[in-house]
Each structure stands twice: as C-alpha cells, then as structure tokens.
Image 1 (cartoon, rainbow, N blue to C red):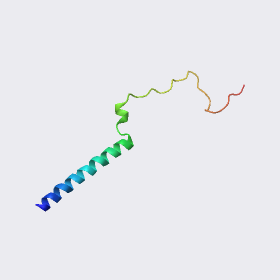
Image 2 (image 1 turned 60 degrees about the vertical axis):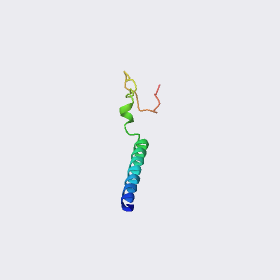
Image 3 (image 1 turned 60 degrees about the horizontal axis):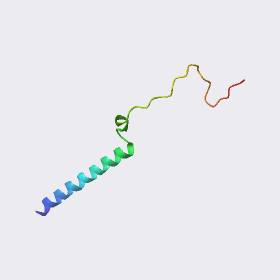
Image 4 (image 1 turned 30 degrees about the vertical axis):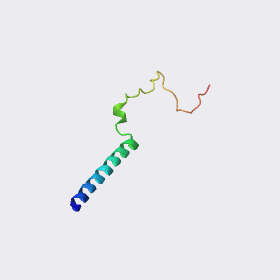
Length: 59
C-alpha cells in the first residue's frame, strides 16, 4: 500500500515539474508569439538609394 502511494506521489511530482518547466520555457522564450500576432510591416522602401546610415550628406 505504501509503495503504491509512493509511486503515485512520484508521478504527481514529476508531472507537476514537467508542466512548470514547459510553462516557464515557453513564457521565457516567448514561443509561438509570432504565430499569434499579425506580422509587422517593414519600413517603406525609398525611391532613391540613401547613403550609409549616420553619414552626413555633403553639400
């Protein structure tokens, strides 16, 4: 009887740890967020090629 109770307790503890681990991994990794959100639109394409960002234009 005690051995069976220990087995059930071990199974409950293992399942609880697995669920918490799964939840923490996906909440920290933000897993699936790109599937739930709409894709962001990129910046508009410029008609003229610009110089290197941060470089000043010469007059």
